[in-house]
Length: 425
Ligand code: URA
Image 1 (cartoon, helix red, strand yellow):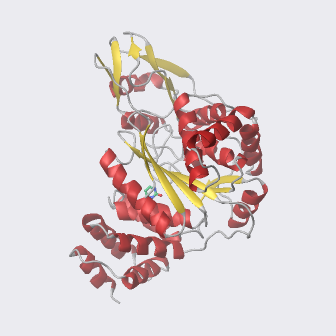
Image 2 (tube, protein in one colour):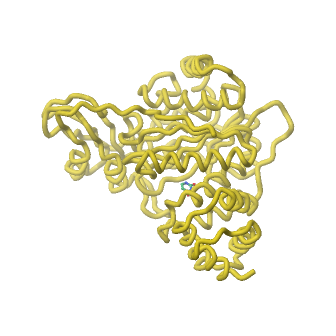
Image 3 (tube, rainbow, N blue to C red):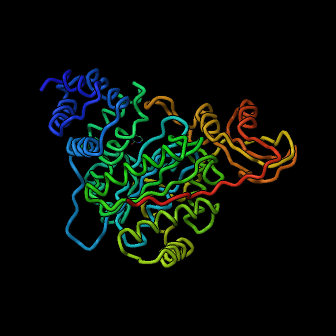
């Protein structure tokens, strides 16, 4: 087979055969096909899309480019969650120990932040000593001994995705549903799971800006997961305002710990519980939503999830009792009285990057201590001069203007439901 002919077929809108996809991904992984040809194919896929069959074949080949986690035949179900990412999105941190307390094993492979949405691993690394680079052996051992881990995908798992994602990032080919599906699902399938729940976000602070785009992505992910033998469901959730109050690495860890202890903001707790409910229902562990939600809530309130979290952090080299470091803070106030009717969440995420709390290039360093604390939510009434956002940063005054501008205060009532749909087929 000739790479340029395969690229030309896709460029002209033809369907690629399973063999052509396998040839291309294998060649790219072992460096027989250079980056420029892979980039050209990614652009052709971006422009012309892929059928369900092609997407499944691409996912399968990216999965087979590396090894997979292997588990003993025992009574445990292995489960995980993936979020498409959003500002203040921290539910993985309470969810992993919660699912472990519910009797599952959770080999959670997470990512780093790139762009306005933060990454779970960056957040966890604000805990002194925490290691997010576990080897395959460590992932296997800690998942079985502790019940949960949260770590980066080691380079043996879906290496084709790791190479391709880096290329897509610099060739403007990230927002393609088949490429995103194959990227996310090849990594998740490499964990050899029984069930997966996805949090697919839409809105100004998400990767997918509209509900319609997010629905298409959720359907593609759910279909691919189920076709490949992992019971997969998705929640479609609103990201037109930050999740919870805290945005920024160490700040989000402090809020996650509050949720883990049965406290914390209602929206983070609710989403964490609903993601756990999806796993309990999709694995048949519980048969009613009410019983599943009750079970998850009781565990959060009991202190058991906090104990499991501490065990996981210690097993990964971190000190759960160490004091987190936050920058000094100052407050941004409302420019007028009225109702908070809109929050440009992407702008808030961008402000955190400018402060040093996020990265614009994969190799960039992160300042864990900076971030924002939201003092209001969409729908809240505010008075002129009332503090609306607390800015944690040495040079916080410099951010007052863009942060104030990101909040629209008007006379219109507003309400944003958090979870808008469950997609299971
Ligand atoms: N996250 C991933 O892991 N891959 C994508 O392509 C997009 C988001």
